[in-house]
Amino acid sequence: MAKGFGGMGNLFKQAQEMQAKLARVQEELAHKTVEASSGGGMVRVTVTGQLGLASIKIDPAVVNSDEREMLEDLVLAAVNEGLRLAREMASEEMSKITGGMKIPGLS
Image (tube, rainbow, N blue to C red; front, side):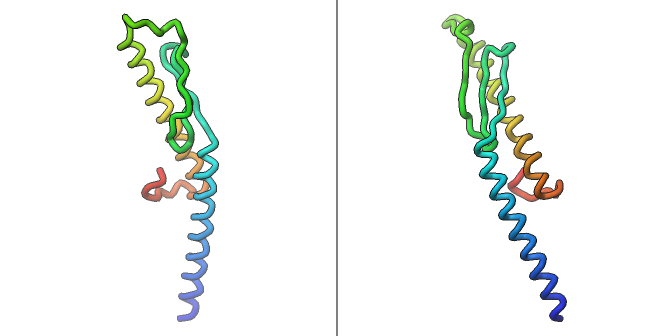
């Protein structure tokens, strides 16, 4: 029976180590960014690995009150692409730790 507890202790230790590694990756993701653009680069966004919008850059050429809806669409497209890229980056970083194992709430 003692052998069974030894195995559980080892499993618990491995789980704690994985949790520490995942926490470290989460912290690292806060400092990593991805960039996305739309409209041929006229609208550019930067998104952090924790899905925070870090910046939006808009080319002055597209700032026209008559084409406000087009600018809104470009911003929306760039932000959505940035979020997609950030999720992809975070998933790749987490899979390095989990070995591709799907853990609820992490990817």
